[in-house]
Image (cartoon, rainbow, N blue to C red):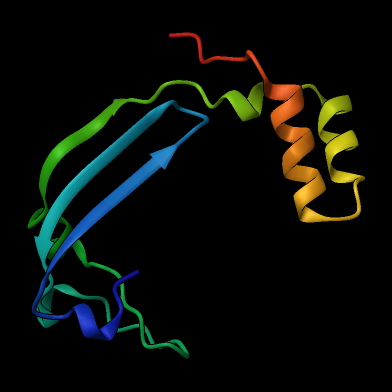
Length: 104
């Protein structure tokens, strides 16, 4: 999503997908004729086909290390989410994930 204040400027675009373990990063100068004209409340737009073709990819579908947090078993996630505050949830997350690392 491109906010109105980014039009005419260089934008760094980043995309990642844990399920496919891939990420991409590119740069593009946002031009009005390269945006879809869909209207929403905050007036953000998306790149049209010409805008997407104008992206210079610095990394394109590069390998993404597995997300350690997605490797937590359901019991641990449920225990974390049952806690009453955000601070307690984060503390418990660090406790249960201690020593876990991504496997490449």
